[in-house]
Image (cartoon, rainbow, N blue to C red; front, side):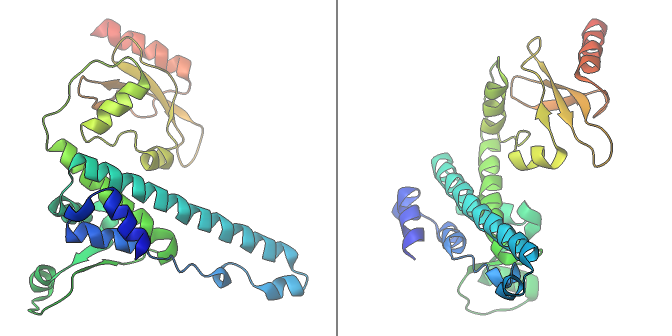
Length: 252
């Protein structure tokens, strides 16, 4: 698979471990997305243009998303190579990342989980949640990203003062944190509502499933670990959160 070989050579090179190499081949495969699952030309021929158009729009969105997942995977692979992520870390983290749906199937796995003793060509195997084409690259990227965090957490932590949210994000990631992970922030509807306040605080807002957007006070340390001060989503406005922060500091 030329695309996979090119990517491996530009990252791990000839020393690429087999499990990582096979993960690249897994992510590089064609998605197999089927436009017939989204729209039917018969709808257009029968004058059902709205149904047809909605289907084509959904299909194009999914195709773009699959392309974005490929970019995410490539970035994760380059980072993994730079961070010295090992085959063992990738296999270990696959058991937890993305709900464990992407599994490393090997002779040891078959013997331990199913009691089978057989010669078996190892491979990555994905169990879809809903639709394989829109999930498999997300799963592969998630496994690599989890392995990157594991590699970073295994090293002595970096310690330094930060003076901006961007610097805090870099420090958090460098020490294996995932507080600023885009997927997590999207899940909670998190927005950063301030820059660094008095050296160790900032304000965020989150969107609950029901009701209005609420605000939270966050604190962080010199290793970039972020914690919530008081209750999550405790304030109705940024002004309320800032006023409460003054009280927190006065009480300290």
